[in-house]
Image (cartoon, rainbow, N blue to C red; front, side, top):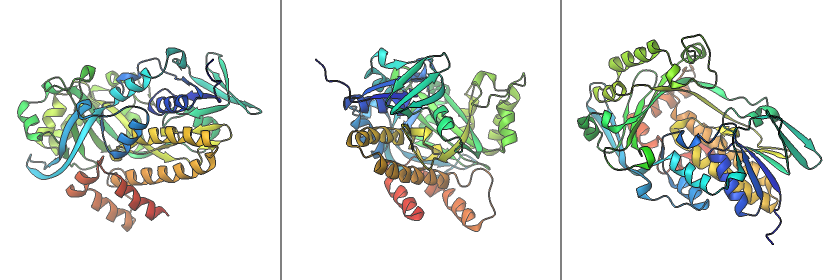
Length: 411
């Protein structure tokens, strides 16, 4: 007979943090089941991920070995001036892998009976040593522990720590994901198999190649992924998240509902401020989409029998490229700590690490958004918008030294 599971773990959220947690916990003999508010459409979310040592270690711990053929090889970074001239290169061999590839691998580790879609959490109840998840459809599921792995706008966090909201950073990102064949061949050649960057007032633009449909890596079958950060107060963000009928999409507007005049205004800004090569990529993108930038770090991850991990526990700005690896490390280390009865020390260590990641991401984005008069902030912003620093630190292949510097500053 199979061994009796050690405990029942309810995991709210079926994206990266939830999947890493379910895999790690089941490997240790726990009965871990995922409940995701969306259906099974998550595999197509996200685009590229810049790899680094921490991500390799986290994915390896889940039983997957990232290889060069699992992504697009990048030589490093290249930065353009407004007139199209190259103002800097930085060598940083790196593989840009696919969010979907990692998702599909992790999802394949679970049987369908262990992954429940279309389950939106409504309430959490406790009864002795038991925790009960109550869903919008009336379903009630009892377990020994409940993991909140449901992202930046976590329902779990709103229920157990409502005093910890995600905070708007003062800027949003225009993003695009297009067939590389839409990008002029001469522009791709000039990008030289590197992440391309370009500064503009209010925030920088960056772009790079990622795997195409079906994880295709052959030239001509890949996608080009880009983002442009734009300073905007909350009123302007609200306007950009409001469709032509006047409906405000607080949690993100579908790309096909973004008002045409906003897209045209963005293209006009691109023509005024960005390099011609970058303009051609934006012009080739039929339907760009929008992403508001938020960050926070919860002071506590453990709330009785409820535990927060991943973006539900702490969300960093995307500049550091640590989202997936932090979620994976949160999940695998939680599983090990639960098994060893060491959740107290786990929480202390993970909160400290999350604070460092969030603070580093704020450093990297310090010149975007509203600028305080504080001279220390001004000095930080001026440093991080320098081409050499921007190219070396954005989604760095070796982030540990940056995190160690931040941790020392926070200590």
